[in-house]
Amino acid sequence: MKRQKKMLHASFLCIMMATFSNEAQSHIEQLGDRHGKNGLGLTAKDMDIWFECLLASVSQCDPKYTPQVEYAWRQCFTFGLSLMKERCG
Image (tube, rainbow, N blue to C red; front, side):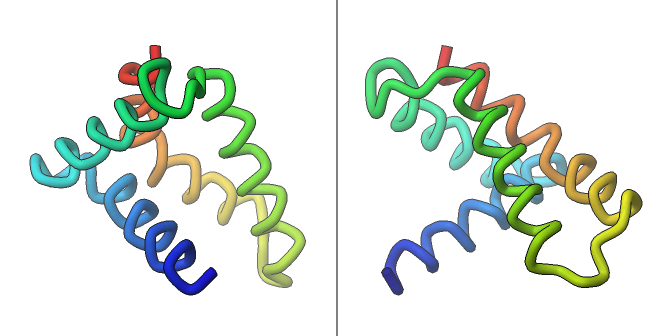
């Protein structure tokens, strides 16, 4: 479980940094390949469902969650998730 938490944390950082970092973009593309049709078999729709579930979890765990916080999450993840979804096919 500890390893999964570290991997998830690193993935979040890469997804958020993808807008600014070519290295993060490359890593996200690799993640998309690993999670896509030639890897785990996830689709772009699966990624959308995952992200909505993530936001639902954040809203339940963060007492300071507001529409502005949700907007910030969406803004931070939009570009990186789009890269992953392109690679998932």
